[in-house]
Image (cartoon, rainbow, N blue to C red; front, top):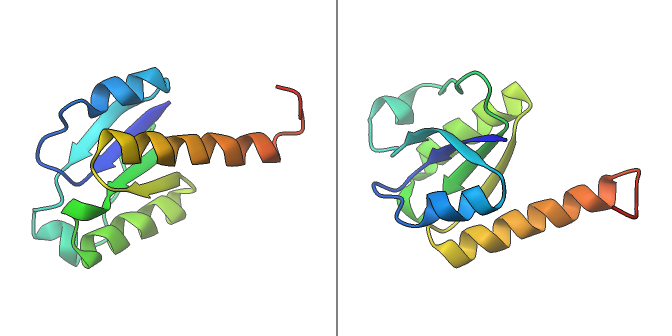
Length: 106
């Protein structure tokens, strides 16, 4: 699965956490560029998940990328930029996917 990360200047140990969930970073945008605040952002081709780091994003930037994910039919996850918060958000996402799965005994 390919993910686009939005927010945070440095990722630290986050790529290792994502690798543990089978997620590859397809793109990383810090969200500091003024153009991200003014226009609807386009998601790169092949992105399956958008991860928004809320403690490093302004309201307008987050809104633009959430709208872009919704328009593209891509799932998004919001969390703080910490390893623990990211793990919890991805675990919740996995749990909700299992509840919707037609195979209940996976």
